[in-house]
Image: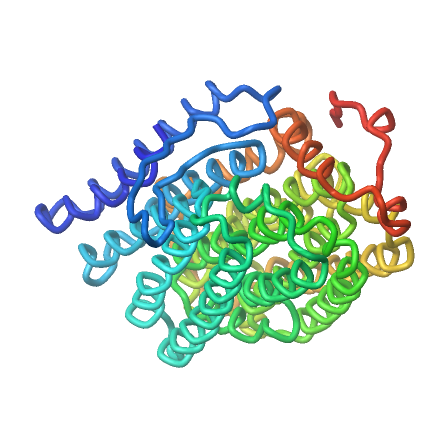
Length: 503
């Protein structure tokens, strides 16, 4: 079943090539079918089993140690669902008059397929192949349908992401060579025991590769350009799910496979996370372009995920996974709303936007949704952002209290730049030369409504996600060495964290 949610989008892309006049319809049906199969898999998922489920294992290129190994557990399940959902919504968010629709929709589906494969792959070379396969489609999507500086942004994106892939490949190849397992299967490498110095070396290489992908300061400079210059559906995928390959990789291949070395690098990662959080928040305040503000805010909020992963205890890792889901939903909705604003007003500049909440002549639906989403991003209780930050900070405080408090302080800056956007863009009077802004059509509202419902639902009932994730994250953390005094601070008593958490 897992193969179907990878190859259905690929099949859809091929069909678009054969039936070019129905490209939007085929893309929508394909993305919907992939989402439907993903939901069926989630319904069949045994959340009490910490191991891999729905395993598919086929020998492929044995001399290289490359096998087609797919599996699903509580760590990858929420991200797989998020990817399928955002792919479907990205198709729905695409302008019906998009240029060269056949190529656009085909590339969009290929991105979704590649990301899905990366989350399901349990052979390191297979993961690398999927990890790299999304680069060229994304490069083309940015450089063809992007903004004025699309060429620069796309080239910069490609260089950084290619560098990330090369670093990871070097780490994977070196690791397998020293481990002498004969293949790159995750279970084989997890069963090997390398000396501490080699573990630390390979972990640092992997951290560099995934740190570029997330991205972390100082490797973040590709992100604002790529997000801002991308079209709305591409921005939704980039910010909502593609960036999660970095955080997912840190948990799966960093904490999961190098637990002893993780204890050594954890304090440094926590320090990087607080620098990234404060820097991203301050730079976001200084922006005048709404989309660039959101881009920098995403840098800050992803750093909370890194802090939680650094702490490495049951509660913090669970919070990291939840925060990834929350970040993906919120960021996708923000980019969707900003895309509608730009389409209706012709600008994203705060200096030129006023009175969008005007019930008669403005964009009241967009304004209302924007306020709700910004509240979620700021961590208002009752919304998904609060749950992710609460779990992450509560877990990380046990290991890094001072750094956690500073990061908590940086969340206050989130309110600053979002209040600035709300005050300048939504309130006040519309420009005198504007009689009526174009109305938001029904099909344009659908992605925003779906994402808003999920943001509130998962904020009120977080156990929908937690119940499927916790067993896997507990098992993952249980593999971390108990011999370090540092790790003693990272250990959370399971009795202090009830399974049935519900807010």
